[in-house]
Image 1 (tube, one colour):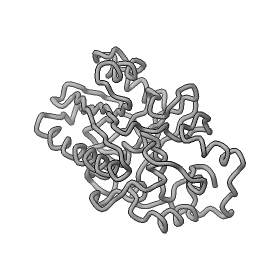
Image 2 (cartoon, one colour):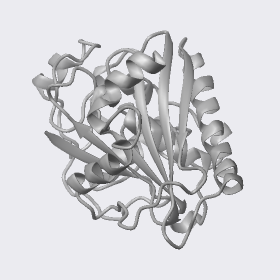
Image 3 (tube, rainbow, N blue to C red):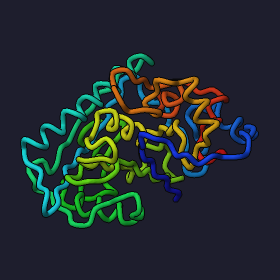
Length: 282
């Protein structure tokens, strides 16, 4: 099993990558025409096509700490950001001819889920899974491993997202667990995002952050400079897709799901040229 973490930062890394862009390999060219992406490539791969009338189930889990407790008012206020993100994703999907319905399950909004040890960018994937299992073992689904079946049978949904909203200071990030035996990226039962009430230089959780991390769980790549995307390729992405949500999260109404991201999440066909933005392809 391969793992990759995604984090959104307002400023891309300043580290320069010296070597030129790599040519597409014959392997990448071979797998791209298969839009269903039956073959898998390392830690990141493309989602299968999303149904034209898709239902996405979202667990939104408010996690309190012993010193910072969620209550009905504060969690309801935070939920407005996720509703805005969902509405934006629906509108953007409609541009590509897809109708998306979000089905939300909200847990912990009254301070009834309390955790002491919290996930961060430095914790392991094993820790994050244990963290999730502590919460889901008490849910009617019976545990993290049972979520795909529960979502399908109980909620009639084809996709599932897990979003933790932690009452504390930290970065927003997604952990995408690539299970090579899973036919679709979103069917990997462990994919999840972590949102902190206070986040980095923004000092507040923004709706654009919510949308950005949710799209990661559906298969999206970052299109700004990171350790996995060189400055040259990030600049190319910016020149082609300046309004992409995977480049900037500010002013959500002005952002778009670009054509690369649309392909990755399964609502548009792909092109060979998109592979230049594949992470770790420096």
